[in-house]
Image (tube, rainbow over all chains, first blue to last red; front, side):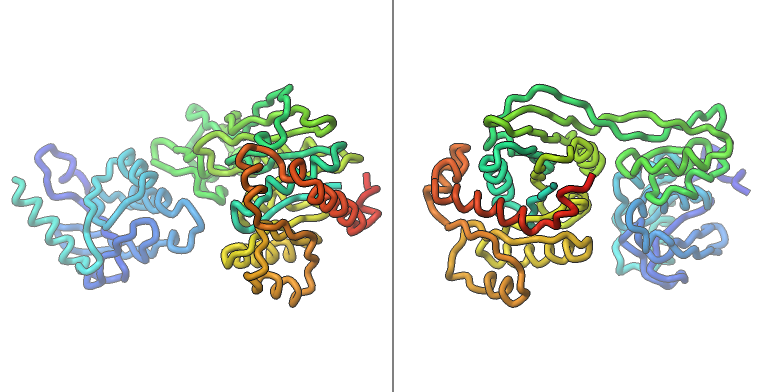
Length: 124
Length: 285
């Protein structure tokens, strides 16, 4: 299903991961990466999404890299979040996930995705 | 017989007290367990005779054998291993060297490799003090493996004084546990009192008998003594807040060398502590 994205000229990612405080597109973005409540995996073409609760919220340590592992496992190409720590960043980079950080917790997940997509289309 | 000198708050005078105890005993072992910032050597001025490297073990994965089954990641309690699908990466600083990944790997693809975490130093100080200290490598997250190695040098028959790291976290617990007695050093400030309470809580949980020394004692701060009295704790000694003690310290001179009356207090203190330790513990093993 990712064949569409594997061509060179793609600019729209196949799947976007967003850190979220809740399980819906209307939830606010979580500024925390490793310890957010949910990850939302969104397919921009259809805007369909899957919500995955984050076990890292309760982890004593290593929540960041573990969350990064999950993002890779779910096959996201891009991650929208507030801030990513050094270790998680290393994992994401090695797993080929593009990090777009700096989102703040006052934005809804669907708006964060739309902002990202409109910025993306302006780039072209 | 092992006596640990600990405190909640840093800078209360653990090293001064521990080194003074060693100095008055003379025939004893002194271990500087504050391996992140050892400074007992400044006060005891030992002649270092031997340095020993200390290692921890890390897993190393043979990707020729690994089939990415994920068992190692599943059993890792510390999230030190991360699966990138085509590669498993290790975050060295997260690894506690527990060996679970090695034990459970169905392919036997993981082996142990050593990694240096610091050194132990051994020497003699004054006339008859056996001196040990540990120096943790900069950036190493846990002092515990180094402290364990340091404590493996404890010999029965001699009195061992361990100078504990400050605080109440893993390294302090490791230094204090298995001791026969703990001396808690505090100071006449609200911070000293607050952190003393935390240290007392730790010792109660792990069941180590203890007594308290107030260093830099100022009678005006009454809450500290009120707390000690109200709980029925042993107040072993009060070291006055005096300029000349501080001046001696700033030159690396122990206050017991400087003030004969303080030396006598420390001698009495060591007799008192020996009396508090259960005889079966003194004779054990």
